[in-house]
Length: 547
Image 1 (cartoon, one colour):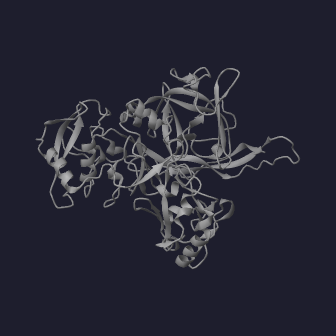
Image 2 (cartoon, one colour):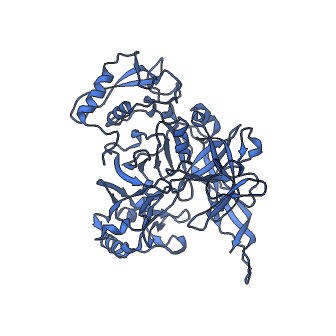
Image 3 (cartoon, one colour):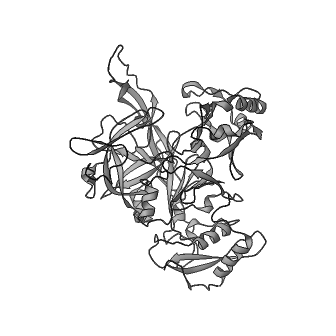
């Protein structure tokens, strides 16, 4: 399926000619009433047919984050970025660009909620629609990136009651105090229980000061989320505080931002790198595509569940793993789920997958039991493993490299675990490994998912404070040095040693201890604060669920 914003060379020329008729320091009136001021003229790339173009540094005559409903300008941007690697802040678009951080298996973002804002970290999950994170009343909820969110410290927090049926989300239970309480359970046996709270919420950067500098709060909205009071499983041990569901449901942040007029369409993108990545709310950034890589779109379904795509084949180094493509469409189909770490395919393709793997490597495919790192590989060995290609409707092909689907152990540089599981009775999930080094666009209004090879690392200086953006008034582009402090987070390295009692008739818990150590998740850059020479180790109390 063609991209909604891809254009032919002739159409692109019309758009670009219209732009080149603007003289420097003049203005362009947009259809929604916004005014784009031309700050500076720059040489542009040639179009595919060799036609030269010019680029203009543009700034909105109104507030920087105001709405800009201009598909024409988006089309021009999509064309003009080919062969030109300028700064993202050259263009003023109706989207917000924020950093992603690497967690234990998948990626998370920082959100700010309340007045004054309190920070929390949330896994970005396209497979669900509820958002929740631990609150101050949460007991035995683990140690994460931030203190538990405290509703009593926010002047704008509102505890949702059962009388407010339009705000009580999901299959909630009404408590005696009339609070809406919601319980969510996940396939890996994790769960949380939360009261529902309404407050101002927005996605931001690592620090509040950086978020304020980039005016991220312009994308704040009154939002109902879960204030977690208890949790189990991976939610207790994960690095991120909570989770943010971003499917197409009406209760997700993306839909709420569109309803409030903060973004023009229900669209966002995720681009995961080895160390972090970039999230764009309200659109996508073509400059996150690798040079020469075009956005490819495939139809998607699922308004209240994870986006589902039609997979037509899976190949290893070009060798198909099945002769029956319909196996991928059975059951609920193949879903694109950013919050799932791994890739899950139907077990009906296991034999074909192993045969294709053996043809490429000389040995049958085998997963590691209990998430152990059972495969021994050197870096050179890793480069010889096959490329996994997901083929989708519309001719879309997404290549997953070995470094994405082979998970390296933090304790042994030569120990790996493959993260492709051939276990599903029907259907499957394309998890975070599909997002690695790919710019993935979710366009819910047009019912498509887009894929391009990505250069995903987030660059804060590309966001455009006036002192460092290309074409700022009063001078040429300035490339400011990015100073990034070392960021560490605690990681559990020894499991909870609690032992469950035998012969119990009711579910209970057992107490014990576990070992946590500091881990570097962001290395310093420029003159940023250095990392400690020795990582701290801590013995903590823990609670184990005894079902």
